[in-house]
Image 1 (cartoon, rainbow, N blue to C red):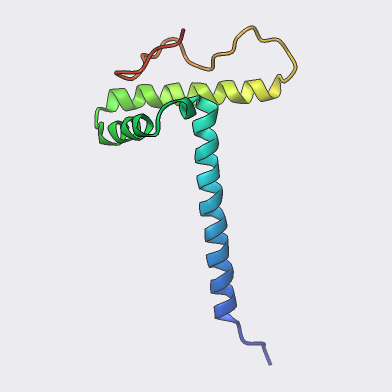
Image 2 (cartoon, helix red, strand yellow):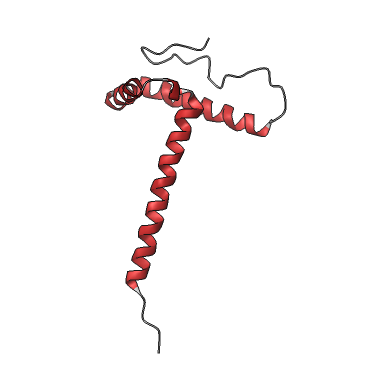
Length: 107
């Protein structure tokens, strides 16, 4: 005879896994804020920027932001691969994209 499944234990394991994933997501979001340098902004400014991005429905602006973010991650991946090598650049920003309104461009 087969052993009956313990649905309560399986449900609890799934809930625990969901909590772990949510905690990891929050940690990664915090790491992203630090990696981009946005931790230097005030909390109110950072919240305002994020709310403005959420409220922006302009597809061209969103695409520019997406490209800039992709360039950031591409540059970060390259930096990890070439750790210890002098690449001569500290910026992971695509110079062809325009900064969002109200944000300073690369120096």
